[in-house]
Every structure is written in C-alpha cells, then in structure tokens.
Amino acid sequence: MKSVFFGAVSATALIASAVHAEPQAEVLHWWTSGGEAKSVAVLQEEFASKGGQWTDMPVAGGGGDAAMTALRARVLSGNAPTAVQLKGPAIQEWYEEGVLADISPVAEAQGWADVLPASIAGHMKCEGTWCAAPVNVHRVDWIWANADVLEANGIEMPSTWDEFNAAAEKLQAAGIIPLAHGGQAWQDATVFEAVALGILGADGFRKAFVDLDMDTLKSDEMKAVFDQMRTMRGYVDDNFSGRDWNLATAMVMNGEAAFQIMGDWAKGEFMAAGKAPGEDFLCASVPGDGFLYNVDSFAMFDVDGDDKKAGQELLAELIVGQNFQKVFNLNKGSIPARIDVSLEEFDSCAHLSAKDMGESSDNGSLLPSYAHGMALRGAQSGAITDVVTAHFNSDMSSDEAVNMLADAVANSM
Ligand code: GAL
Image (tube, rainbow, N blue to C red; front, side, top):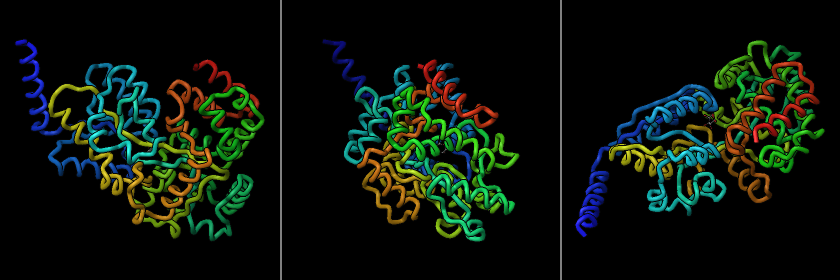
C-alpha cells in the first residue's frame, strides 16, 4: 500500500517539474546552406520565443550522410542529442535500437492524425506510436533553369529526355555548361532517380526502388536509365567532383550553367538570393509522370532530464504547428506536411508541387525518394548509390551497371 502511495506521489511530482522545467534542446541537423540556414532559424526563433534554449549542432553535408555518421557516434557514446533531423525508414531503424522517445502524447493532444496525410503519418509511426514529427514535403524530381539563358538560346523547358539532350547539345555549343552538378554520391543518386522515374515510369520505379524486383533492376529500361546517365556525364563541367549542391545552384543563378536536377531545397537557395520563380529561374518536373517525395522530420532521442523532455515536447508541438509549417516552408522551398495550411503566400513552383502531389496520390504515382532515404533501409539504398556513383565516374557500360546493381541489391538483403 505504502509503496503504491509513494509511487503515485513521485509520478505527480515528475510531471509537475517537467511542466515547469525550462525547455532545452540540442538539435542535430544538416541545414547549413543559405536557404537551409534561413529555414532552421525559423524554428530556433519560435523555440526561443516560447522560453526554450536551443543548442545548435549543425553537421554540414548535403543529403545528411555526415550528420548521420555524427549521430551514430553520439548514440554509441551514450550521449544522444535531444532532437535529430531523421527521416524515412531510418526512423524505424533507430526505434528498433530502442533509443527513440515516444512523442504520442503531443501528437494526440495536437490531433496530428487529422491534419497529416496518411502517407506522411505512416513514416512518423513506430509500432503504432508516434516517433517523429514531419516538417515538410520536398519534391525531388525537379529541373531548375536559368530563365535568361534559356531565352537567349531559344530553349523551352524540356518535356522529354530527348528534348533535354537536344537543349544540352545546343547550350554546350554556345559555351554554356548544360548541367550544374556536384559529384557527391547523394547528388549522383538524386539525378539518377529523377531519370529513372522518367524512363521506368511510376510502376517501374516502384518495382525497382521500393520492391527491389530483380527483373526490373536488370531490365532493358534500367539499361536505358544508365545510358541517359552516361549521356548526362557529358553535360557537366570538368570541376564537378565533390562540389556542394548549393554551389551548383549558384552556377545556374549566375548563368554559368543552364540546368540543375535537384529537389526543391534548390528553390530555397534561389529565394534566399532574392531570385523570383518564373522571372529569374524556372521550375518543371522532370520528363515523365509521378512525384518523388522526401519528407524531412525530427525524431526525439531518449534522454534524461526534465528540461530536455520539456524541450522535446515543445519542439514537437512547434514543428507540426500551423505557423511554423507555413513560414519554414516558404523559406525551405518545400510545401507544408499539414493539409490545412493555406498556400496563398506560396509561389508557382509550390503550387505545382501541391497539385502534382494530389494527382499522384490519386493515381498511384506518389513515390518515396530512394536517394533521400524515404524508400529503403540504409544498407539497400547505399548499395544502389554505390553502383550509380561507380558508373557515373567511370566508363562502365550500362550492361555491367545493371548486373552490378542486381548483385549489390541481392547482397544487401
Ligand atoms: C535532403 C533534405 C533536404 C535538403 C537536402 C540538401 O536530404 O531532405 O531538406 O536539405 O538534403 O541538404
């Protein structure tokens, strides 16, 4: 009897002190480019305005590979950050290691199930509990272009890969770099999956990069994807190796290059530099139907201390809050994850994204990005990207590439 009584008292005391504790959060993320930094500052400011103390832990490196290495080191040393930019199946992988905090009380109190599309909510759940909070929907399959460069060369936004290649040849002859690209594995993978969506179609993409269907991985269509990658290797400049994605975006901005194939965080970069869509730069989805989504989210790690727990609760609440979802995404280039945020202040590229996402969702062509960790577990997406990069940086034939791809995937399972 006695111990039950004392147990009840101490639980109440805990809740009371968590409520009064000053919210603290050490936040690990990889948002360090101009547009990204501006976006994450929105969260920092909201957090501070509610009395929170934010300790920033940015780990530079587009796509987050370096951030994920840093995260592993922190967790292994028993010192996990409070909140971490984490997405796709990596959320469930960390959950299975028993290191994530359950944020269901916040999610339920805020009614997340009513304001998030089921496809997004699914990624935020671990065995029925809420284990991550979504900030946005990035679209990956975009082509960005310098409007003046296209006009001066009499080129329209391409709607087929043949048109893209014809435009690239023309630009190259005029002394302009057709494709701004950074030779980093995740950027190679980003271009590859955009090409693959166009050539394989939505069903083929799903079979290859969601179901890991061996026949599709080795198919003639997949060879055609590698053929197009080989052609595009001829459209990048000599200094592409290792270049950061935002520097490639800057090449399109200043007219040194005409096109970039990149997710709409590139739009965040154009906007941060004061460029306007439709005037300075153009956006179009890559040739082919479908929509590759990449949802950024934050997971909370199991940490001690009422101040940190209060920080996690506050962060989760703010992240899915209506105001944050609007202001953050206006800066980030993405669209809100919530369905009830008005897009009135958003630009034409965001409107196109929202429209295409709705249509793709209805016709079954809304697909998770493999290159941005939404479709597969790390071992499998890593195996695919290794082949894509090895092919792009050598004279490997498309035949060799598809065989290597099928072997790599088989060995990763
Ligand atoms: C993506 C991430 C985006 C963007 C990009 C470049 O994986 O989802 O938010 O920042 O990397 O770093």
